Length: 352
Image 1 (cartoon, one colour):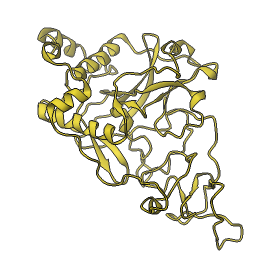
Image 2 (cartoon, rainbow, N blue to C red; image 1 turned 180 degrees about the vertical axis):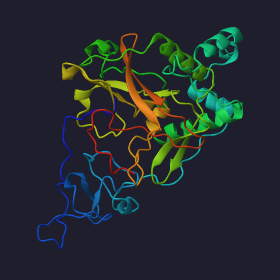
Image 3 (cartoon, helix red, strand yellow; image 1 turned 30 degrees about the vertical axis):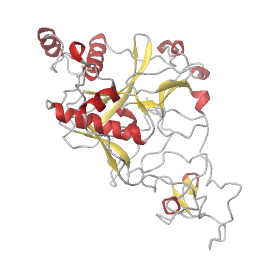
Image 4 (tube, rainbow, N blue to C red; image 1 turned 90 degrees about the horizontal axis):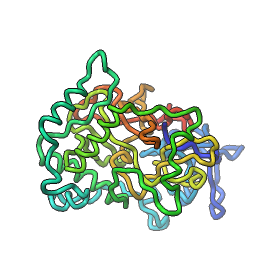
């Protein structure tokens, strides 16, 4: 679980070959962070390729999970024509709140195929998933908002984020020529073994997929924050153990992504041997999981804000990644999971 463990360490305060030496009052030439004034944590101190000032990756808003490999410009220089780079800090263009456009964007089933499941079968299935002391750890399907207009608003918020980030919607793992083939996704290769998703929980996951296909959407809103970027909020109360979403995107070998600067890669398979390890890359095809925050996950007092857990399961012999509520979530509450997972590759104790 958790994002992909990169096979490289962060570099010291990075400086490109064209960067000019920065004058400093310190005898040892150390660069200090413009935000906090400290020269500590040099491995996480960036140098702007525009003005040569330094700033910690965890002092930036939104925070960066790692030192980028390419050119980087500080917030001040991103508004300057000299940098040639602009970071979006204004509200993105909203996707049209028009039913036909939204239905087409997400390929929602139309007509008889979009009809709800038979009433009897649906009631029997939901009764079987009621939480009780005897079966307290079974996963629950999400409960869609009852108002169809509200569901359209929720879908439009995700369409806005996908459009702004240049991605298309996908609710499944995708296998693209030139990356890892579907046959490479074998849970049997997991080092130490992978937990198997119980049959009843597999049925619950399938139910969630079917509901989304007919437009019964999870009660989630993607909102744009000028500090954190795109984030996700609960649009109604969500119970503990509810399946929030599956983490999806293109599947690739970790070895192909060792120098990838993307900040959304997720571990899919930690294989033995490591050459067969896989990651999920949601930069081109993704769902709402891409916008759930995994790094600003502590309060200024150091308390954890996580209300989701990120777990890898074996489903029909393949690896899958689920985000599941680990407590009751209030309406309007932002969703967070631990970017570290179990691998502790990126320190998040100072991420607020």
